[in-house]
Image (cartoon, rainbow, N blue to C red; front, top):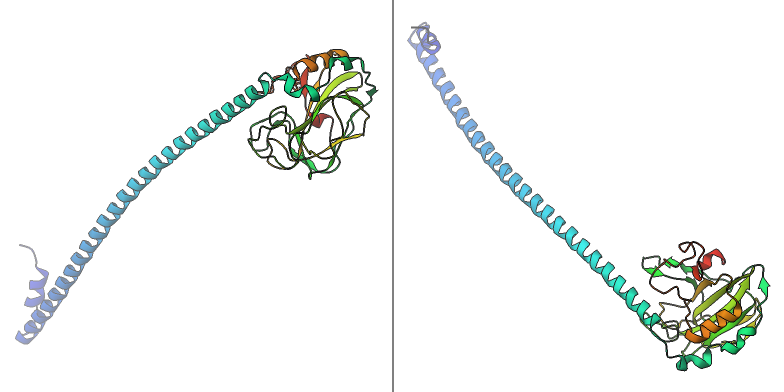
Length: 308
């Protein structure tokens, strides 16, 4: 029937005392084994509890991960929706601004500040190049776009209020008006003409045989030194910088229009009828820039091309 190790151990006793001693030893070993078995069972139960807790935590983590992914997807969708709404809002603002500036002006209201057709026989001497209209300061916004985005159709030159503005070439003043205080500007202020320009000047000049129109906006009310129909020389002070109209701080906004081979007489006649500072190029996009029109004029030039 085989051999039982414990029986063999007992039956191998030399005498009764030896047998009793061996049986007592076996009992102690059995009790110790039983204690170890109970301890092992306790450890096993504890490990199973820990495993169960780990499984629960893992499930909870997976659930939280799924929730985070859902929240991230919702946040991304909200951000995309917000960005789309901002783009639509900015587009609507630009469209409204363009419509406001393109609205039919009551010429009688600005007639005293606009050149008359009779001045069309004035000669403008051609100069070999533009000179800087403002000394000091620096570019705060370039042509075609603001630093933070959004259409910007000219060059903003940031300088303190009262900085002299000089004629960049020999020229003829087409429009000059300073109806508002020098430091009255804020975003959404549509004072002046064109709307939002505050105190403004538009002039004609001839550089290397090409006729250009140049506009200056957001000027100061003080030291406003020219009027419509006046001839000016290159380097002559015509005004001072300000913070008037639709602005966020003191600067001068400059725009340049290439009129090509248009004559002074034709330009004066055209401006005296509609006082269009944009010369038909509009206010809503960059499609009428000289780079985009393929040489067709009038077109918008980047002032940075001429003023460093």
